[in-house]
Length: 140
Image (tube, rainbow, N blue to C red):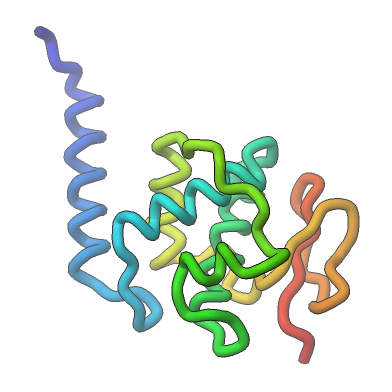
């Protein structure tokens, strides 16, 4: 069996990153591997047909809600909140799981709280459009 060095290096870097995630708290909160996979699953299900940035913004939306007083304080409670995230069926590819773990520490957008297709959400202040999703944050 021949092992490719690029594959081996990639696996080693991934292991180092995962260990880093467990050793350092992000934004004052720790996330379990199960929570990271759940976040990635929702992002893939909600925005799998969008760009990488679009999926990262969905991940940020979930993380920002968990860490904001106006929403429940657990990943599962945020995701299962009535009328919010409707898709939880598609298994995420490895890169989306990696993005979810990365976004815990290095947010693409720390203000995003809502998104919807076709128009900005009436609850928040418009932030940006990525693909067919419109992202909003807290009104000042």
